[in-house]
Image (cartoon, helix red, strand yellow):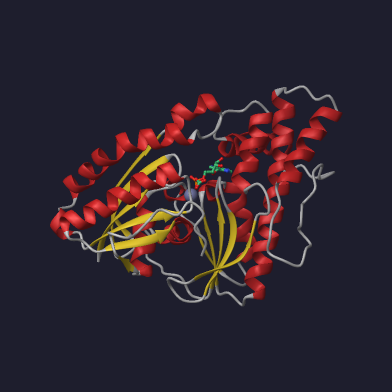
Length: 335
Ligand code: KG4
Ligand code: ZN
């Protein structure tokens, strides 16, 4: 089955054509990130305007590589996300579906991240699986017993993991998006000092709680307090040190709670997705901890961030056709 997937929930516009949930025939992404850098975050209006500009040329380019007559269905992420951005993708997908008489599949953006690790892979999940979806807007633990049915086990109560990386980076006067910058500085510190241990510096919020929720806002505040109380100037060395200990604290919590959930649910696979899944330290720690008990699935870096291919992959497994006349974007879509 060949599916054209459309993604426009935040600042990226992604259009891709994927065969049977894994073989990527064409994949186009446009991002307004360069424009958003000066605001150090996403301005919804700017994102949506750029998406209106980008989406048709991206579709045309995909369809110059794969003939429309070979496309079996159109899929779109209809939430959660920024409403202006979502409308661009959803209304475009509905129009394509109606005009070209292709069935329409509606996908939850988070399910897209869950299935992203199957892209360009020759494996499928051994179910049941527990998934950690970590992005700029979400930190969710999900349980998937059978394809197309995601159950939420826990979420962040305040900031998402990626948001915490972005906010700490902003405080440290690093570029947006902050995640890659924090990772870079943390790894430089690690290289200088060779796995420094010592005082953990920052707390691991909710790590021992008997639930699968997260909280990253207090961690961010403790980073700010630490820098201010110790009158640290933002020298390269101090930024590297703070990045290192912040990343370690955030990753400790993510890994510990994910493994706890996978054990409790008797999962056979552990799956990671979302922009923060581009973080090598998180991947390495999660893979290490899952080695004995679970099969570990992670997306290629290019599919960790928002893209249309992951929406087409999720659609292949989800298979829930919707009426193009009635589908509406849902900014706060739940599972
Ligand atoms: O999934 P995504 O592209 O968009 C959302 O749906 O939010 O995720 C973007 C987030 C940003 O917060 C960014 O800082 C974070 O993913 N991120 C990272 C890394 N690369 C991207 N966080 C930590 N380490 C990274 N290497
Ligand atoms: Zn995302």
